[in-house]
Length: 63
Image 1 (cartoon, rainbow, N blue to C red):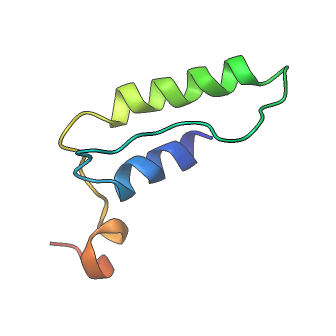
Image 2: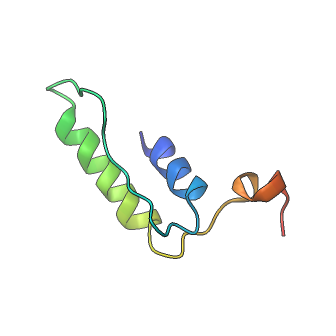
């Protein structure tokens, strides 16, 4: 879940107008952990402007 959240943030770089949410049912015993993980990754990696990794930049080239 950590890696997927970070990947989503990097794909959305620079991040203006991006909304992240959960659209599927989460198992009752996992929702709290899952939501906390997503929130932690957004707090750590979602500050604007979001820096895209090379594979998410146009053409996948390193600047």
